[in-house]
Length: 611
Image (cartoon, rainbow, N blue to C red; front, side, top):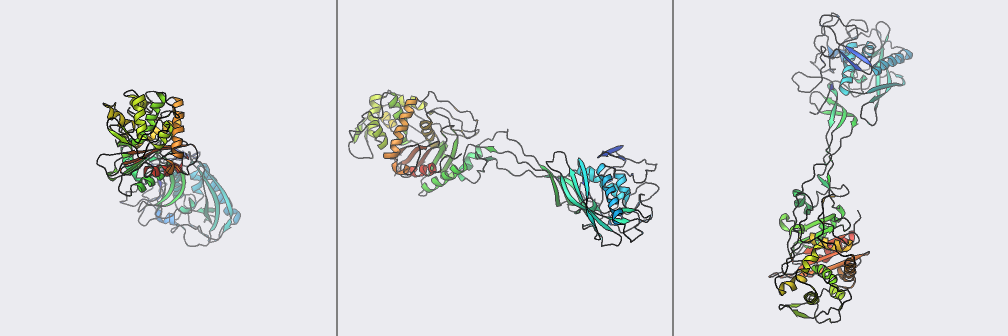
């Protein structure tokens, strides 16, 4: 049980952690300027200045306070004293409960004066003085002392409110209406260190005429608070730290509902610098018998949830990516998609639709097909070609292996930009053989950050692409169009599209501030500009047109169709960007690039980068 000090009752055999103040403890205690004096074992304490070493025990049958060696008085029944059911002999102001000899109530002025005097003494910490103004001094002093030491207010203020009425105090401790009592109201203001605002509540107390004619506060537990009554304890309890997602998206939204992220988040090692949670504190009333909180009276401090780790992911983009791969994998073809913010390298979405929870978007090592022509085109541009350079697209070519195009026939008037837009295999093979030295593709790929280790996030694994130097002319022809030994995945190809859009490589990351690998060499600005022009042409008039139709803004795309030996259908690839959002999608066995992967990528691009 999270609990500090308690004002309340304790039952025999109960493990409730109730604060009991030892009357032989510290020599003096102060609260609000008042002092509490401990008594002497053999001496006599001044009347009304009883030890602060007792917790308030609210009337439960069989609960007794014990022996009080005060002024020669023996034990008295606390249950009766609190409940007001017994009026032991003794004048007001002594350690006993004073009898209410008169059933005639005090006058309104007398009652108001008694209330004012009692509240004033309580507020300034003169609890002996306050207790002496009640019909049960010992009990009142014990209760008020325990209240101060259990609830720990930094200041108290009371303002009488409203005229007296003939009704008894309406509380769990109220006795049946009795003649001779007048009820008065007051506004309580209880301040706490560290609380933004004070605790305010409306209190009530009753005033009676004692047997000596004085107006006295009739002591019942509800004088402290209207809800405080028999069998209850008042204490400060901890409020639990709210549960918080371990990780959120870049806007603080939870990510736990996205199935594709489960394997990734399971391996992600979140940094230990996130701010820990802090419990809150509240004044509560508990049931002494069961220990349960029955009333939460005031929150001193709100609990603070632990600060989750914010990833670069965006919940809106992630939701679109999940929907896209789910739709394109409905025929049983595994699908993956990655979305990247070109200006930062921040990964905005990672989605997979495949059996077994394999993060193919990061770990697949499959040929990227004609999306590789983005890098091949960059190498040709750096070798001296221009987008307008005439590069005929022949129906077939040989390396000596025979190669052909998806589009039949010869297109001898094509330029390099036309070949790119229509994804002409033979043109890229022929021009690469004529213009590129061995290993040129691998060196150009370094400008896109490929072929070197990446760390997207602590504990997260990813495959970093493979572009080996070809060993023969057939291998060189295959690599020019993204086949053969070249291997990539949605993560690496999304980065390729992002590099074109922004003009420079920024390694994809999942955590802002994560170290980002640098490109081996920079992509020339003029080449980046020419590539954007060529990708825009592919989106407007080429093989990507159908998928990109309707998308506005600065857009560019490239389709890819990667043949797989023995597979009934090729893998569908698509890379594209729209403004500050780059996407790569692959649907294994999905056929032509614009058909399956293109539809998935376009669905995410339509959402855009709203972050």
